[in-house]
Length: 78
Image (cartoon, rainbow, N blue to C red):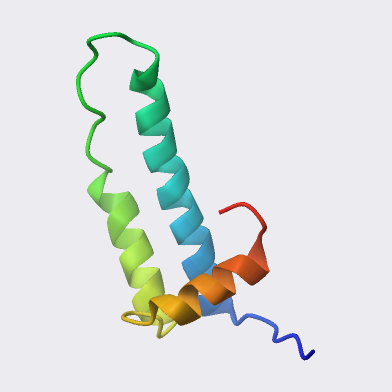
């Protein structure tokens, strides 16, 4: 099996996605333990914009299958 080395832009896209995912998880975790707490805050626009730009730069916009294949090869726990 041939292993492709991700480009800098692909690596940046995966890292931006993981930051976005961790931001969302943290938002939900911060209110999960508090009964009657308000809904989690919206993801900061800068975090979402970073992820979207990184996907565009890597040529992965609209190619979820390729992106998630890349993500799976990058780490075992997204």
